[in-house]
Length: 316
View 1 (spheres, one colour):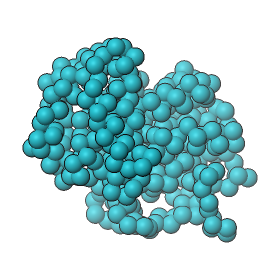
View 2 (cartoon, one colour):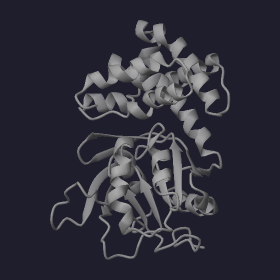
View 3 (cartoon, rainbow, N blue to C red):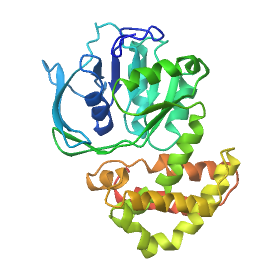
C-alpha cells in the first residue's frame, strides 16, 4: 500500500478530516500529507464566502517553517476516511451533534480532547459509531494570528472507546502515521487518559491561578500547601475507578518531573486564562471531583481548584 494512499480497511477516500482548527488541529493538518487533509467548518462558525481554504505558517519542532494551506471540506466531496476532533473538551459534544449526521456511520472518529469526560460522553451518545480517543504529548500554540508553533515534540496513543472501533485501530494509526509524528495503538486508552489527567490535574490549575509557567509552581506556597492532599485525592479516585493504582507520592513525583521538564512552558489552561477563553477545568480537576463524589471520596482540593479557576473568568 502507498504510504499516502487510501487504506482499504477504512471507508471513504483516504482523506483525513479535522473538526477544530485551533492549535492542535493546525499542527496535525500541517504534518499530514498535502491533499490528504481538510478542515470541517463548525456549524456555528462563519467561513467567509468564497474562501475555500485556511492558510497559515507552521513552525516545525526542528525550527523549519512552511506555509500550509488546508481546504475546507466540500459537502459534495467524497466522504473522508477518518475524522479527527480537536475542539475544546466543552465544545466537542455540540460540534459533533451538528457534524456527524452529514458523515458516514462507519467512519472512525478520533477524539483529541484534554482531560476526561467529554470522550465518554461522545461514546455514550454514538455507541454504534467507531469512536476512538487519543492521548498526546505533542504541544502546539498560536502566538499570533496566522502562525502555529510546534512547541513540544511528543507521542500520541490512540485506542478504541466503542466496540466497533477495535477492528479499525491499526488502520487509523497507520493513517495518522503518514504525518511523520509518532503514533501508537493503545488497547487500554482509558488508562492513558488517566495518566495524562493525573499530571494535568497537578499542574494546569495551579499555573492558571498563579499566572506562572509550569516550573514556577514548584516553589510557590499555594502549590506546596495543597499538592500533597491533591495527590491523595487523585490516588483514591483512581483506585475507585479501577485504574492502575498509584501511591500519592508516586503521583506527586510524576507531576513534578513533568513540571520540571516543561518548566518554561505555558500550560493550556494558563493560555486560556491569558486570552480570555473558557478553560477545560471541568474535564481535569472537575472530572476528578465529580468521580470522587460518585464514590464518596473527599475531593475538597480538586473542588476548590475547580471553583477558583471558574472565578478567574466569566463563564469559565
